[in-house]
Length: 234
Image 1 (cartoon, rainbow, N blue to C red):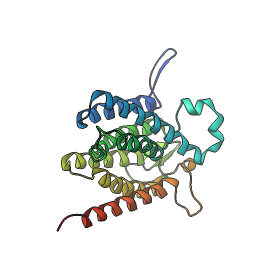
Image 2: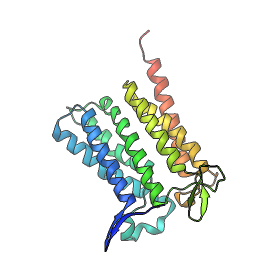
Image 3: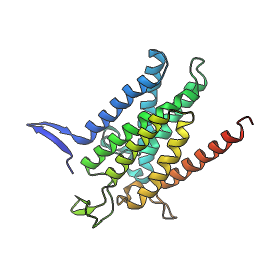
Image 4: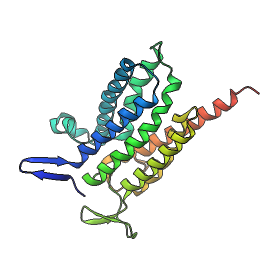
C-alpha cells in the first residue's frame, strides 16, 4: 500500500487520484483515436459521459454507505463504484447517440476497448491506495495490506482487464460491448468472492451488489448475442 507516492513539504502526490487521472487520460486519447466522429461531438460525448459516470459511481457507493451523502469530503474525494460509473455513463451515451443524427450507436461499441485499459489502470490505483482489497490468504503471492496478507484482487482484475482489452482490440468485430459485458461480468462475479472489503455492500442472499450487476450484464449480453444470431439471414 502506497497512498502517497511523493511528498515535498506540504505537497503530496496521492496515488489514487493520479492513477484515476491516468485512466481517464488513456481513455480520452484511445477513444478519440477509435471513434470516427467530429471533434465537437467527441468532446460533448466524452465530457458528458465523464460527468454522468462520476455521478453514477458516487451514487452506487452510497447504496452501501448512505451516511456519507451529506459529507463534502465524499463528493470531492474517493468513494466510487465502477459499475455505477458504467451505468451512469450509459445514461448519457445512449440517448446522446440515439437523438444525434450524425452518430451511430453501433459504432460506439469500440469504447469497450478504452474502458478495459482505463479500468485496468484504475485498479492499480486501488492497489496503491489500499482499497478494494482481498480476503486473507496464504498464497505465495499474497500482499501485505491492512496488517494482513491478502489476495491481490486488484492485480488479478487489472491483469485480466488488460487481456480482455487486447482481445477486443484484436477482434475489432461488431458487438464488442456484448463481449465486454459477458467477459467482465464473469470476471467480476468470481473475483467478488475473493474481496474482503464489505464496505462495497452485501445483499441478504450473500452476494455483493456488484455480483448482482455482473449477473445482469452476463444475462443481457447472452440474450443480445442469441438474438443477433437469430436475426442473421439464412
